[in-house]
Every structure is written in structure tokens, then in C-alpha cells.
Length: 214
Length: 214
DNA sequence: GGTATATCGATAATCTATTATCGATATACC
DNA sequence: GGTATATCGATAATAGATTATCGATATACC
Image 1 (cartoon, rainbow over the protein chains, first blue to last red):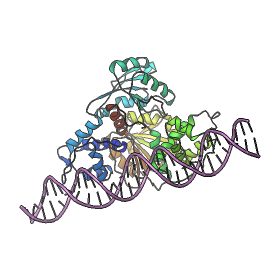
Image 2: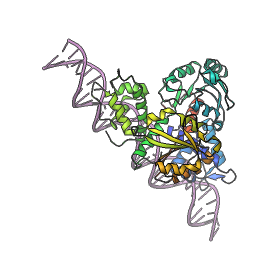
Image 3: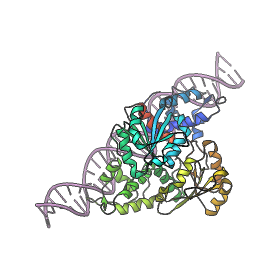
Image 4: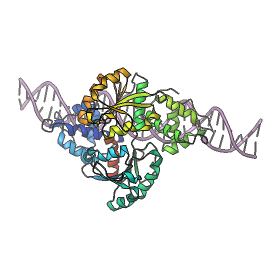
């Protein structure tokens, strides 16, 4: 446990967690790498390797203790302590994210939304406040927010990104379809809807489906 | 051109396309692999390699012809002929996708939305119809729809997935946070918001940011 | 026209990720 | 208690992706 971890493994961990959490806690006290892999479409060796980076191991003939595994993955991913975030761009997508309750399970708490359009400011029906952009920097600094979510149109995204950086944000989750420029010490993660679509589109157009396992 | 292509390359192609399309068409008649790479944060060799799979090549000292490149990538990804799709689950996220105009640029046309809640059926403010689930199968078959988008809660997703398959859908784009089981001949692409979040969350919690280049 | 240079493409080398092999061990059953 | 079996972890082998090297070529400039 606590080894170096690969990008690929890191991205599979939430999937394991998702599945483990959904198991009936009474019945499935233990789970084998094989069972977990089958459920998610991975090979058992990969599952074992992935889990070896975060858990201190299963027992032969028994498997892993479900509860411990959940705790270990949550701990590793930092889901056990909450990350506050703000969101900029309260359009349809922004509002969808603002009102999504599921983020809590991933340790994410969106504190408020911001938008340049003062018309839509006020309390959203999600219960979250939508505030004018002018108040963003102050709130971020005051609450020491480190994570910013960008859901504005591509044309506005770089500008918004720059103000987030100026507000002391350390990580940006970008939903705008554009490549943003950030300082080296700021983490950027693009949510790349077009890339997913490309995979689908390509596979559909050449029916042979040569690339299963997506 | 027209070689075998890797998953990774396939997913970068839309990013190149995005950037190329945004260039002022008059000024940038040609573009070098280096310039394209710099703009997107990739190495020039990677750009060349990626492009070699879809384009019939640039010219030394000149670079690639922007217009041709756009055409080649679009052609390769199948963005030049439209894919009709339906969407199931007209909640906030579903409506956000229904009203997103940007999909047209990727050759995606969402024909209609479906929802089990008859309250929200009717014309959405995006202009798209939201229809009761009972009409889905018939419409899919009649219009020979091949692509289905799932934006229902996790608890409903497998059921919806099964009806999509029964309706003749050949590819599924799943936004529900759950692993779906599909027949081998159906392509499944999960939009994995939790995985992205994991990368961010992990990087934030260990500030060293050992994994740049996301 | 000749030379310098930016850029290309192909091949090779490195790095990363996945899959296979094998010995070890905890439980179940006789 | 002894043996069979499911499962584990570690190491080795394979496959896949990225990065480096190098020779070739199109344009620019003298």
C-alpha cells in the first residue's frame, strides 16, 4: 500500500469504489479480485495490481474485506475530507453540476456558483447561491477555496481561468471545449466530452467495433 | 494516412480539431506540428505521429495545410456525416445536453429526449421534444437511431440501457455513475466524471502535483 | 543557382501499462 | 491433521505509448 500509482490506476479507483459502495453491505463482507473485475469488465490481475497500491491486501481464498477496501480507496483519493469548490458559469451545465448531490460522495462541496449575468443571480433552485463574478475573488480568498469549476462558453473560458488563478485557485476542472493556459503550479483537468464522442463516433462509423474495452 | 490508430491518438484528434477550427482561417493557412503542439501542450513529435494516421502529410518547412487537416480529421472521425441520437433522462444534465448547440460541430444530432416523468414531457425550452419512455422503442426503430445517451440516475441506468439495446441502439454514451452490462456488439462509452475528479482530488491533496500533463 | 534552415517522416529507444506465470497461504472438507 | 482449492502477491514477459534520433526535402535568402 501507499506505493507510487499510475494515472490509469488512479482513474480506475473511483470505479472500484462506486461498485463496492453499491454492494449490499451485509451480504458481501468480502470480495475477490475476480468478482470485482468481472463486475466492471477488468481482468483479475489488473484489479489486484490496482488495489495493491491502496490497500494492505486481501487474504488468499477469501478476498478483500469490502469495508476496509472502501475505506482505503476513499482515504487514498482524499474523499474522506471535503474539498470546497466554486463554479463559474451558471448556464444549463453549470446548474446541473450545482444541483448534483452525488459529488458529496466524492468529497466535493460546491460552495457557490458565479455568473456574469446578474439576471440569474440569487438562490438557484438547487439551494446554492449564484453570485456576480465581481464577488468571486474575495470569496475564494476569504474561504481559501482551492478548486474551481469552469462551465462557461469556450470564448469566456480563458478569461475566467485567469481570474480563478488570480483568486488563488490551485486546481481547475474545465468543462469548456478549449485548451486553457495555466501556470505550472495550477492543476488543470479537462473534461473532454469531444474525446468521448470521438471514440463512439469512430466505432459507430466502422461497425467492426475494433476497439472494445472503452 | 488511414493507418491503424491508437486509443490515445483517437482521443487527441478532437483537441487538434478544436484548435484548428478556432484559428482565423485567413491568416493561418498552414500550421506546423510544433505550433499545434505548443498550443495544446503536446510535444511536436506526438503531434506529427497523431496526424500521420489521418492526414496525407505536411510539407517540410511549411507544415500542414490547416484546411485540409480539418477536413481530414473531420472525415476520419466521421463528423462530416450526422449521427442521430436520442437521450434518456431529461433531468438537469439531460436538458443541458439536449440544448447544447456545440454537438452539431461533432456530427451529433440529438433527435429527442425521453423521460419516465410525464410531467416534464412536451417541448423543452431547447426546442427539442421530451417524450414519454413508452414511445422510445418505436421511434428508435422507425428512425433507425443507433446512438443512445443515458442521463438517468444510476438506479435506473441498467434498465434504460436494456431498453435501448432492445430498441436496436448500437452505441451507448453513459453519464450515469454505474458500470453497465451490454451485449458484445454494442459499444459502450462511460463518461466518467468521478475519474476526473479523482485525478484532481489526488493532486490537490498531495500538493507536489506529481502528475502534471493531464 | 547554392546554401541555410525549418520542418517533415520513419525508425529506434525508452518508458508505461497490461497480462501471464508461479510459488505461497488461508479456508474447506474429508 | 492432511489434502485440495481459491485466492493472493511478486516477478517476469508482453504489448502499447511516448520521446529521441536522424536523414530527407521544401522554401527563403544571398
